[in-house]
Image 1 (cartoon, rainbow, N blue to C red):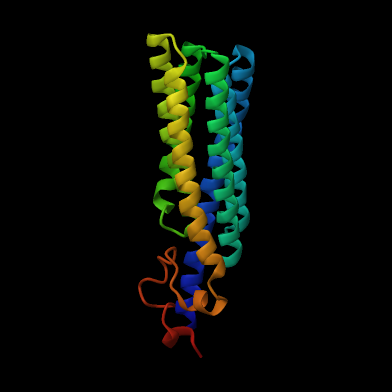
Image 2: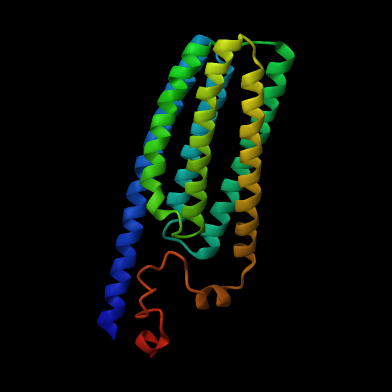
Length: 232
């Protein structure tokens, strides 16, 4: 009986360790892309790239929060997910403000540079998405991180398409329209993750203790998930 539970605890520790390694990788990738996009956006005067670099910086912060909450209580992880939903909300509002600013100033971004750096960001976020894919159902914390990565893929792909459209039309409107679509995606994800996080935060500790976690692949086979094994 004790050997059973010790084995499952070890498997859970290995799972957490694997999640941490993936999160360190995606944190490093996003931090690097933040520097690249920020410098490129500053040098070529692209507001779109500067805004996307802010998104990368926010993602790095989000992954750091996920790492912080990885081995902590369910309540702590729910709090981290709630903070991440607030970041998503802020990003959505920032993109809306940027779209309004561009429509008022009439500034057209440099399409070729925008497309090249956007393509690099797309490749980087594709790598992050693939690394996070297997952990998307592990728990609320990892799920919110995966959703954030998915949003980045959609946003980066849209930026590349917008760059092509700007180059063809010579106007700023493709960039503005794509910006508003990205904002809508961020706001939807913020609402979805925030709702789940608040529900998890309000769940009594006793109920959380008795509810099987989605990340408990090690518990699903009925060993340590049952009181008969480790109850006494």
